[in-house]
Image 1: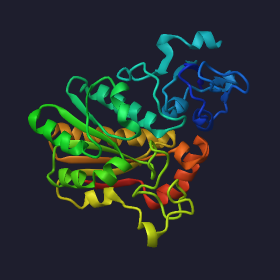
Image 2: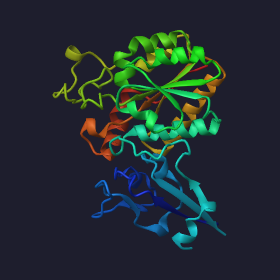
Image 3: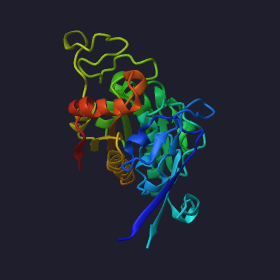
Image 4: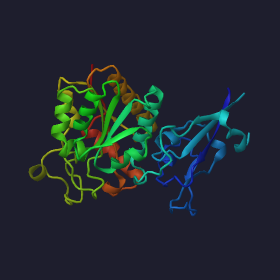
Amino acid sequence: MAKVQGAVTVDVNRCKGCDLCVVACPTDTLLLQPKEVNDRGYHFAFMANPESCIGCAQCATVCPDDCIEVYRVVLK
Amino acid sequence: MTIQEIIKPENKVHSRPRLLTDNITHYCPGCGHGVVHKLVAEVIDELGLEDRTIGVAPVGCAVFAYNYIDIDWVEAAHGRAPAVATAISRLEPENVVFTYQGDGDLAAIGTAETIHAANRGENIVIIFINNAIYGMTGGQMAPTTLLGQQTATTPYGRRADLNGYPIKISDMLAQLDGTCYVTRQAVFTAAAARKCKGAIKKAFQNALAKKGTSVVEVVSNCPSGWKLTPEKANEWLKEHMTAKYPLGDLKDL
């Protein structure tokens, strides 16, 4: 079976750290930064487990600030 | 494969809708407005209505909607968005007109305008964000507030004997002959958001086909007004809001 690998980019300064992408992620890829904050003081989301991302775009669909871009490749 | 190899333009499967501006929204973290803005922008782009759509912004949290979606907008007085949309749709019948209103705007001060615009069967789309509270002014009780729900003006919970019952305005609108499509959706999960997008698209297609008034109610959250984290607010929405406001189509002609 073909393996799917994905990756996301987060527009750090647009992120408000609402945690909804972390809740929506089915593979526990995303987390909020535990200490680091963006220019507006929010703990922004990042890929904590990049290898588990499948590029399903659920995080981007529920993101109220549209700060997530999703990429996906199918490895043959 | 490394992350850098995956992050290439040809592998992109989801990006920010073209019609959303670069402005950072003023909404609180986790607010459903941002998701609905995104869905509206995607639908308008997919239907190719960018130059033919006129939005009517409400008074409430979504008052600055015109800063976020790059189409033509008119700002209406509090609750009067369906009346303004009536005028625009009659004067510009080739264009698609939609209103974007919250529950304080549509279900409280604008009840008369909403019901009569729907009863006349005006050819408009009404997008109604129901979060059961007056979000912008600090979380006061709205007509849609649930029984027992604590707000700034009902600190011991809403009481039926004192404050009346929550109003199901979409069910009322579904009874009117002028409406062609009334549906209640939500955006608290990715699956719900995709369904909601389909409903918004159908409403815009009805407006293009001049079928009458389409109403899309979106049961949304208000983490700041409900005094919950965005995650807990969505859980509360799923448990309590969808019990009183069940999701699904109420009318589809």
